[in-house]
Amino acid sequence: MTTPRLELRHASKAFGRVRALGDGSLQLFPGEVHALLGENGAGKSTLVKLLAGVYQPDAGELLVDGFVRRFGNPAEARDAGIAVIYQEPTLFADLSIAENIYMGRQPRDRFGRIRYDEMHREVDALLASLGVSLRAQRLVRGLSIADQQVVEIAKALSLDANVLIMDEPTAALSLPEVERLFAIVRALKERDVAILFITHRLDEVFALTQRMTIMRDGMKVHDALTADMSIDAIVSRMVGRDLDTFYPKADVAPGDVRLAVRNLTREGVFKNVSFDVRAGEIVALAGLVGAGRSEVARAIFGIDPVDGGEVAVAGKKLALGKPAAAVRAGLALVPEDRRAQGLAMELSIARNASLTVLGRLMRHGLISARSESTLAADWGKRLRLKASDLDAPVGTLSGGNQQKVVLGKWLATNPKVLIIDEPTRGIDVGAKAEVYRTLAELVKEGMAVLMISSELPEVLGMADRVLVMHEGRISADIARADANEERVMSAALGAPSPALGRAA
Image 1: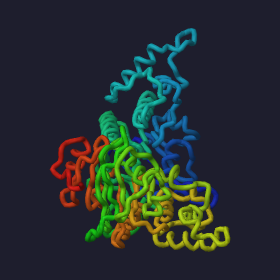
Image 2: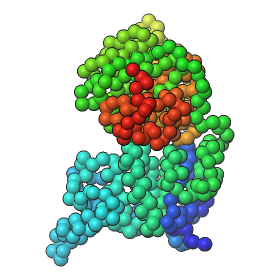
Image 3: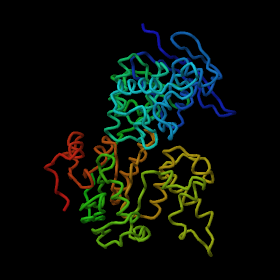
Image 4: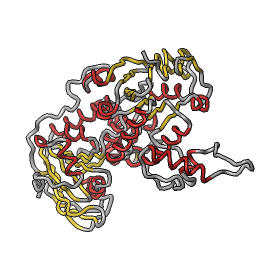
């Protein structure tokens, strides 16, 4: 049997009384893409930092090509051929790609001068081998996250890395960028590089990986071949319980029109956007990044200006460009970036949960702490919020629990229409299931939901209708029964669809 390129055996790591990793075990083989799965807090990040030399294990052992090693720092792990590509690359923006790749080890002549021509030739060849059109002399500033990740991969290869750890590499990428990254990963696999791929997107696991390790509560709970697993089996092991259905979308008879958008236009961004969302209906707004989906949502809510068009909520025309008026009319917007736009990270969980209804909680001009805590506790119970102290800063919560706080904050306004942008971005599978359950309950209660999502399985699993945007226009309106990945992607790329025109 092939010797693992990298192996971690029964590793543990504690920080004071907090045990971050109880039994971390993993085998990475050359020429294989291995998924590391688990909810936030399962111990994945601690395990990765042990492999990368950031932490040293309290117990257990690490083997490289069959030999026991102990890394005292990241440089020692790098010298052993281990490289980590993080979700947000850490490059020097004002240096060139070549200078970033060869930082601290530039080729020099006998007088100590950097041999730029040689460095540029080597980097251009390296980038060409990855199938990308980047050039060595280009500055990093202005590169997309996807291109920065390619630079990080090229840097790892220039260091002769034969173990590549990729931590949520696709979280901020568009679909074409994800496809390019996958092509690069598959090429590295053919070069016998061992790749550890960490993601919350299970469709990526089945598309890219050959083997998986599942963690829960700091422990490895399952190893398997990807081909032998199903989504239900993965989720069950990750969360420690069976989920009857990952996408719990019940059939609800749609009611009256709650949100009516007519010919909404913002020059250069989107044009003549028209659609309806009815009570008891989830309508998904799909499309490639840059198609104008989030911009439409922001315009409906009044954050961004428009050049024309109308919006009506429950039959009443909305004054555009006024978020406060949108809230009074019954609109709620859960934004794409919950940390920057949805939460005040330094404030308590309770205060964040009540920010939209502070006026309701005031007594004689003062906020009632008891009412604030009661409201937060009520919504926390309904949304199954995992928080031991509602007075703790909301920044201490996991991504999934932060998303629940944002949801609770807006649901406290009793909206008629919920607009939710990328509802499960960056949260683990268990938290995703909770968000889907909440959306399903809301539409059963008669709410109208406009959901913007870049995850096709999510769109197909939860939406009653799929509106697809292409270059600022709605290119298709597809009923749930007719929706599939090929049809949605075809419309997202601008191909004509016979389903276009249902929403006038």
